[in-house]
Image 1 (cartoon, one colour):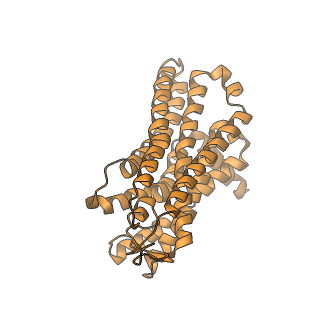
Image 2 (cartoon, helix red, strand yellow):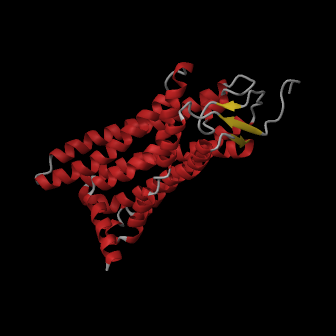
Image 3 (cartoon, one colour):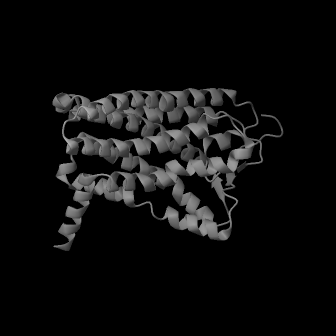
Length: 304
């Protein structure tokens, strides 16, 4: 390294440029991230929810809770404490986990759309195709691929020297913000990040769109009005989550970089770690009669 380069021991997280009242409001919003635990508990405890669809939904809940536990505690501490430093190793670990959970969620959402495609378009073969062995294999592959991609990004990040200033213009150690602090050209990191974005965003999204075209055709063939309503309800819940997650991820990681929208990107990056964990339980519970029924039965048991 040159004379102006040194080993990094810690970064400073700049966070939002907000008033004290707004930061307190965000603090209380961050405290509401317990709903995914309720969803996961219901799926584990209620035997009626032991189906492939809810098996994958439980993985989605685990990912959302992991997002929150990875980023939110530090963000909460920064909102009430003006000493906003983070050591180098925890920063890199935070980046690795964030990327791993993000890529895994993309792949799990794709698997969930495949599950709905088989359930609606091939109902007679559903139990054979979506066996528990297949479900476990799809879930394990999603987790493995997501964290292998995250490991590649982390290894490429660790080879970079950082000269300072060591202020990460973000709420947490988000990879694009950390890359801006490097002393050397980061074109390799940028190319690998774009290729990974195509693999976990564009590819799965295209497959999901094809699946939902077939699903829509399958729903229209259902004779029963109740059957069509139930199928639309389940699929619309999944489409809401997919639209939010993939749309925001593409804006952050695939749109051309611009210094003018750094604050907007900070807000958008809150969706995977904050708003998605808040919205997913609402979307899947308020629009799903089985989840609402499981919650009602659980509350009845507690009151007895």
